[in-house]
Image (tube, rainbow, N blue to C red; front, side, top):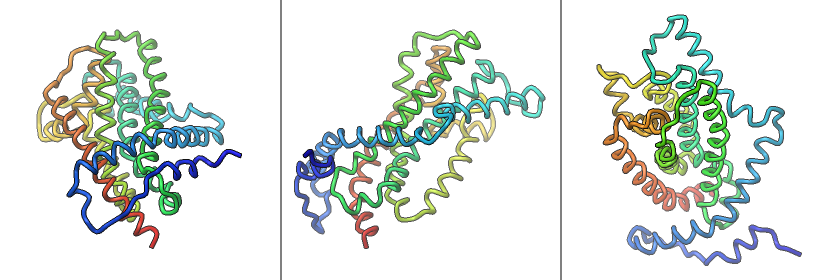
Length: 292
């Protein structure tokens, strides 16, 4: 009889001995362990991804339709308010409903990438304290869901280009690179918050409020402002150059802020590596606290 997958994983994992000595004193050994566990977690991550996606839509009558609803509802409400002159949005380089739906889909992907590590650790608490397996597996599984959900939203984005007859620049083939940087930024933030959120629920509640405020400082429902204090805040927002560059590459083909994009891309990649390191070092202490 075939053994359960988790038992097979445990047989292949090396024995780990925890000591009071900080693991940061041996950085090369730590990096080798991180790389080894990342490779070892692929199969488990795939199985968790398939299980979670199946469970996500098994009990839903409308299925993937719910992936479109937030962007469509937001665009409909804002378009009505803009047409009625209740809001003074300003000129956008795309038809406004398409501008909002495209931008909301990108913003949702960013927030999904922030929340996914926190959700992964929260739902895996019982498993983390009882079974020894590569902790990267639950993060990779959630990252897979982020890309899967964006793939569904991509259907809406492609439909928008056809409906509004918008031209597509050849640079659209480079847009996935900027999208990966946006997801890297969100995942790095999520990896830093996940161990803390496993111990304190305040983090999850505070994050919901923070993301709500962050949305209004991001050019999702309005074009990038050029003057004033609010414009400075929007320009300092780390999401702004990444999100705007994805939109530029897919539509006009001219990146409006290339310097900001490359600076934030470097910060996003560095933040992802730092977040992974923090997650890796903090999780044994978090699991010990959860098991006490």
